[in-house]
Image 1 (cartoon, helix red, strand yellow):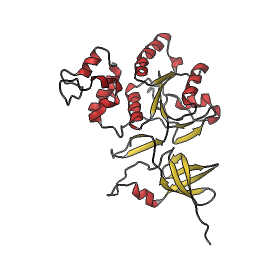
Image 2 (image 1 turned 90 degrees about the vertical axis):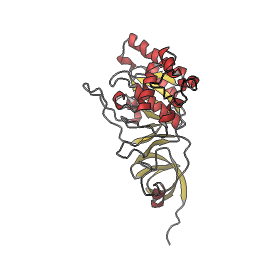
Image 3 (image 1 turned 180 degrees about the vertical axis):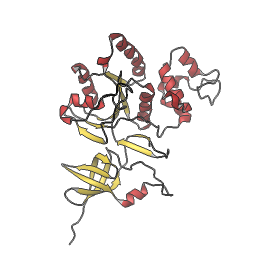
Image 4 (image 1 turned 135 degrees about the horizontal axis):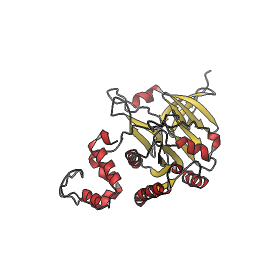
Amino acid sequence: MAPILTREQGRVIRARTGFYDVQHSDIVLRCTLRGTLKRRRRSETGRRIYADPVAVGDQVIFTQLDAEEGVVEEILPRKTKFSRQYAGKQDDIEQVIVANADQIVVVGSTRMPPLNFRTLDRFLILAEAGDMEATICLNKMDLVDPTEREEFTTTFTNYEKLGYQVVYTSIHSSESLDAFRHVLKDQFSVIVGASGVGKSSLLNAIQPDLGLRTGEVGLKTEKGRHTTTLVELFTLEIGGEVADTPGIREIGLWGVDTEYLEYYFPEMEPYLGNCKFNDCAHVAEPDCAIQDAVATGEIHTERYRSYVVLRTGDAAET
């Protein structure tokens, strides 16, 4: 007589295309996706809707087949998600990177590679689109002199005024690492940023037994090399969990209507409805309240540049 297979609920802690490590109680099973579920995740014409229907952090219903393997039967509704447009030839596929996290921690670096405001602002928009809180971490502060440090602090005061928490870190500063720990404590955090900004190094610094791979930044290109190759969930000794993600170079917005992009820039809200034209794109139109606010310094220039790049699709500015 064949054994009776029971359905249980678990959480995805690691995902590779087609295979998912699902944790239930004190066991971890390597699972695949039930064929009927795969089909339900496609459109009526059979086209893919997701790069992968299952993401790290997903709560799933699974059937255990033996001591090591199982089958995912159902993906439970997500409370939050961090998604981007899939970086492939087809531009209408969603790539859910992490599900059900509490916050995104966007890591940028002062140098090696230099800070990219377009990348930073894209991550902040995706956090809002996925109903997640966002914290900004400016890393490698040891590479700048006091004057540059003051300039960075002045710039990021503008983000703090918008409600974003900002922490300044260096793996060589115990005080800054304490601030980073405080951000992560008792939260389920997604750590995101470009390759080379020091995401894995920061996590290793606050918990050495994680043993995450790190890489050097090329001196000529000032771009990092991918060392994290998959999304994986780690438990922190201080309380909380982190999902370390591969360095992301292409951050296509998903779930964001660029026709209404100004609503993802909270500093623009007080000026909406005050332009001469009701359909003002706030790019080159006359008598634009938002452009006037940029000219008077009420809206930061770098934030406005990010808006224009995303609104117009100007790839040259990314």
